[in-house]
Image 1 (cartoon, rainbow, N blue to C red):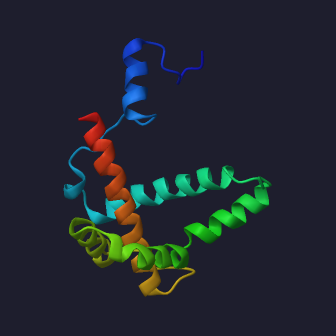
Image 2: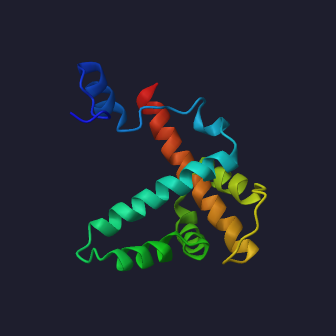
Length: 139
């Protein structure tokens, strides 16, 4: 058995109930700073995009990388947020607003400032949704 594989009933229950990442946020998602939500949201979205691409037929590494880059760019994330904004709840819109207004301390390399702020807002929303579900499953 590999070291990371759950080998006790308690560990197996934890994986079943909480997924592979059995570490709930230290506080409810609503209380996590927007930049921290964007931090986890960026990673969660990246994994989701990669999982999506693996579900497709063409799995050549350079194709996967080009496709992933196109979907996780600030421009793409900004476009996605614009597309879904009307469908968001008031609470989700508030999270997006906080993410858009958050000061990240970094300067965008391949996007204009507006796209970058919208991308941060999108990542903040993803982080909020992930943390909300993850917190509720494990608490």
